Image 1 (cartoon, rainbow, N blue to C red):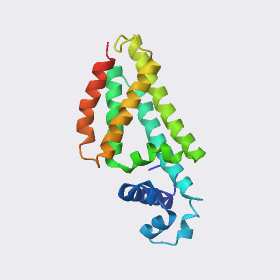
Image 2: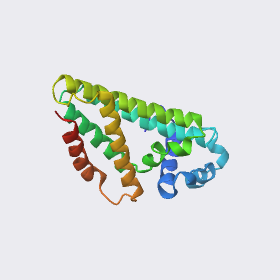
Image 3: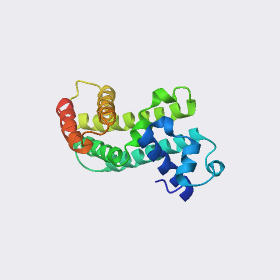
Image 4: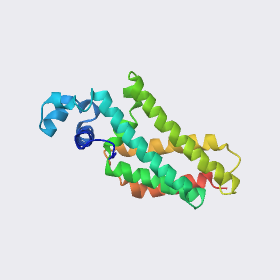
Length: 195
């Protein structure tokens, strides 16, 4: 969890993710959070103004985690294909460890009427596409990645495929091992993009 959060805020986020995992995003209410933690609903408002603020904190947590993953891999040595594989595996592991993140991150249709949440999801998507584009551009310069498709288009294709793969896993009630199947999926992506 984010070190900038208090212990109680971290607990609220953890319980919120558990509730989402058990009953979907609609089960996330301040009443349910308070009941699970074992204190009065009013105590939650000392830490978060409302449910939207809790969801924003969850999205911030995921965004910070993604930024750390991208930053460490962008700076590392290795081919573009190796970096893509490590990035995907890191995200698959994160989703495997906390499947309810998928319900939050990929629920922009639920957030459509909540501008703050929509904006946060957009920031996460834009950051992911921009960083992947950098990896792909470097791969094209080094002759590893096919140059006949723009890196910006490849990054959208890859991220769209990743999104569909993760949604498929989540909608199947996690019936397959996302990290194992993810390795096969990544290999297919590598075949499509390598020169």
